[in-house]
Picture 1 (cartoon, rainbow, N blue to C red):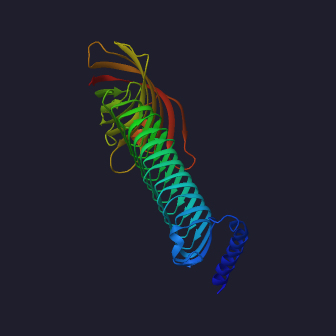
Picture 2 (cartoon, rainbow, N blue to C red; picture 1 turned 180 degrees about the vertical axis):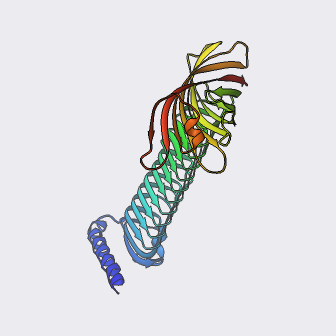
Picture 3 (cartoon, helix red, strand yellow; picture 1 turned 90 degrees about the horizontal axis):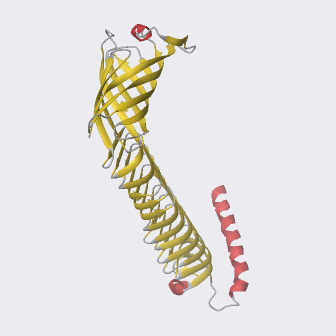
Amino acid sequence: MNNYSGYAKWIFVLAIIALSFTANAQKVQSDKVNIGFAYPISTNGTHAAADTNYFSLNIIAGVSAAERGFSFAGISSVVKNDVKGIMFAGFSNHVGKGVEGMMFAGFMNSYFEAKGMQFAGFSNISKGKVTGAQFSGFLSKATDVQGAQLAGFANVARDVTGPQLAGFSNVSRKITGSQFSGFINTAGDVKGSQFAGFINVARKVSGVQAAGFINVADSSDYPLGIINIIRNGEKGIGISIDENETGLLSFRSGGKILYGIIAAGYNFRNKEEVYAFEAGLGAHFLNTSVFRMNAEITTQTLESFKSGEYFKSSVRLMPSLRPVRGLELFGGPVFNYVNTNTTEGRAITDKYIRTWENRWGNNFEGIYIGFNAGINFLF
């Protein structure tokens, strides 16, 4: 009973507010105040679909030609033409033409175009242009967006000027701004950046492409991913060796500046932790036709697939020569940080600058300087 009395109190308050609008509404013949239960049980009756209202209060659902102020419906509102003002609905708002103002719905807002902000628990669906912002628990969709799209799952638009933020995916033909998603971004031309938990796909990107695993583009100079398939970029298969006798077969891929690294190999010094895996990021500097400087940040692990851990994080500075097209020779110093709890990991080198024991476990940690050298076959 307490809940029902609370609802009744709020309905009574809204009714009083509505009555306060009535005096002003009577001054202009076309001004309407509509209070009702559900169409056609309202003060506008069967004529409600042809009326323009400055205040609407419907316990269940309302229908009107246009709204010019405040509209509230317990479940749903349907407006045949346009809205200028604020709309609230417990479940959904539906507007045939444009909206200028704000929309709030527990589940869904649908409209042709909008200027302002739209909030929905599940989806905002626009058939035209949105100037402002769409906020949805699941899906935001529009043709053109000048502002922002935010959705718990996906944003979909043709042209976007502003950011797209989604829990799973963003889709846009052209975006001037940035895309942020938990899994995938898909776009044509991006005048800005893409950030995704797993994969970015685009045609041309003028900013950064950052993905947890893979970037795909026709043109992208600043991809940040383990694998980067850039059509006008560079890919290379390499063979390398380091100071610990770890040999790696690597795949480097990226744009003109940034690239990703993924590698696997074998350690010839150890007896148990012999299987090597590596991932990282790199950048090209001082790029000429025969020489360039490569800087890389990598993480490597040696595995026996039984027990124990060996992790090595490295910062490499490697001058490289390209004596002929498609061939690169590289080598240089490496600053290493090691974290291990294995006997072989502790003994793999004796050239530590500093060592210490991890106070939270039995892990051995150390830093030292080594080297890395090899050859890349570029394509």
